[in-house]
Image (cartoon, rainbow, N blue to C red):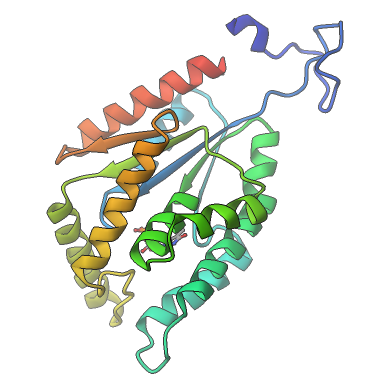
Length: 250
Ligand code: TYD
């Protein structure tokens, strides 16, 4: 099984995979791994550690995040985050917020994610459509259907090969998110309010929606729950990724 996927030296991109000459295999597609969780769930640290782990094993990787990750995306991100801190503005309508998240995502797919996957790389993405479903669908109350329909329309229904959902205890995540917010506020002088200013009820809805997504798609979504240490979470992540790479023959 594994041998079939090994790239032979004479491969040419775009070659007909059905070719009787098995030396002429197409470049194997990369793997798309997303990270999800509440603000303060420790994604950033874990992405860094997984990236280092993969690099040590010689895997070509690309690390990106949403919103942001492209020049256009960074500008969209500013609009999104500004709208949350600018108390003078009426705030973004939930549908506008959702549409901006998808505009950012469409750009990231075209500019970063698809080219990297086509080049056989492993893409680590900090948040993807599950965030829209959890935050806009759950938190803002738009519901899952609209998000999933947008995903089909705007993102060609691109699915991650693996999603690592970090769900430390709800109270612990909330406390961590608030601590981080206070630190950032002290440093920058402004509250970057990544939803930390929102009520617990909002986070609770986000949290519930994440759990719903994981229950709906257990093959794709690996839940890493409970108050684990950074090392323990890393170990679980490595286990899931190693399994993905073995089944992918990478
Ligand atoms: P960010 O600073 O990237 O936070 P984190 O480090 O927790 O990922 O801010 C991104 C915020 O945007 C975060 O609160 C989640 C939110 N978000 C959505 O509401 N919908 C989305 O589709 C995405 C990608 C993010």
